[in-house]
Image (tube, rainbow, N blue to C red):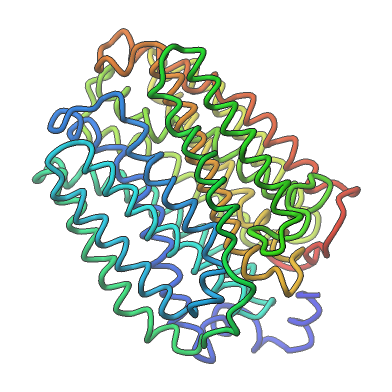
Length: 481
């Protein structure tokens, strides 16, 4: 449909010029800034946590700097579709920026690790709403012919942000102190909040929608919280049980939501035979499988290889550089390559985990960079195409909640992955403090523990692109990505 529409409109309706025309440029710019804030702040702790741990203590809480952020982001992101209907996109987005700024100030002023983690939770709430409202803006404020390019741009910004986030943290730590990182993010979030009402001036308040699904959000919070606290529980059997319990609760939320009067997710989102069901599960599982590299990679590199925070940030940044390069290289893919790149990306992730498990501790640094690069390429090749397929399958009634759910599902996967990696690391002694012995053991366990998730995500990605998938229109095979 998209290809036909572009052809009938002529050359003047094609390209980036059309995307930025008719007042869409300010909205597009705000979406890009929102993606930057969400991605960069989510991962900035990767390179500063060794310094935070040395200053405030709490090595056992390494994964919580990310997982706690993501707990807030998930609850906010999951509700953002409904909140935007009730409050209105303009003012909801502005409020989200203020909440994120407040969380950054809390972490910057934190006297102990408890206040620091509370600040991360508040940052997650603000960031989750920012990212969710950005997805709602894409779905509601851009014509279908622009979705491919908007998602390519979002993928590009996400890749750049995940490169610059850890590197930014490393640079600031080497130049001053880790607290300065959060002061700088607070200023950015405040500027975003001030700009939102003006740049989203064309987005009026809706009719209010059916309300906010509080019961599903409560149970979702319990499930994510169970997963996130698993790495703090002893003995090991209890940690594993907490992860399994949390995943079961998440599955129950999806089943219950399908029969609820006020839904959190689109129709049949838990059905893996549908585009939405297979797409959401693939996004969840593949994201979860990638988180160990971000959360523990910098600390392992600093301990075992003597890297500085900046050098460790550059090494982990190979993943994001590869993500961006891969996304740009396939942005013009047409026809059957839409399907093929999703599958190639899923397989790249599985291979990357094997490479990293074998080489993170003792292998040549080239192989660590290769593993990180394959991990980034996995998402660069597949993410825009998966998002596009899910959006194309949404009914008009599900546009707001379904589009915001893309980021909520991703963040849920990230929280689950960070916690699972945390359990795997702490089971080999990481929580007792960073030593060469437990860093070496964790360099294997954090990757091996999530290989089953990566395989499950690859299976869902293949199912998403299979001919038997049902429910909802598929994107035009002739359109560009």
